[in-house]
Image (cartoon, rainbow, N blue to C red; front, side):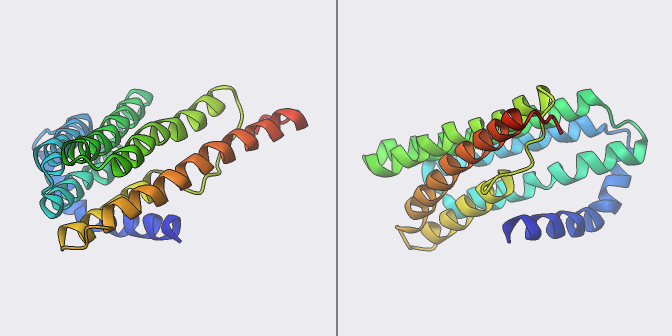
Length: 206
């Protein structure tokens, strides 16, 4: 369901942001610049607010800055400048942004002495990177890896909802979402590894 919502939501958001994207292009702003600025905004939301326990502000800032992830690709296609470097930059900035979010959450819980929530945040931090790496590495080896229970959209939705719940006074919201996400991410790593193993055993590459 989250995958369906993310696809539909991304398409709708792209249409809403289309006037702004065109205005930025007319002003000479490059898609790559939008990618980098958006990531910097996420870092501000993560380390400036989430790391201090200001969950609602953090979610709002990260959500707004995350819209650049929709805009940059649309801008590149509209300008006819979509290329492999832009795709690499986008993926790299995504990894930095995701890592910052969970590092900031881990920092907060380390400061509060909540070791269980800290552990969950660290598991999410590590497995989130591994989930993405397994797919990229498999595709680099010529094998498809279009499987996964928890991908980037699901990670951000789950942790965002949990942060909002905690921000509105339900202290269990974020810890619960972190453990749910940790379990789902571990399963996704296994799921992708097993998928590639089956392709290799069957002698398939696509």
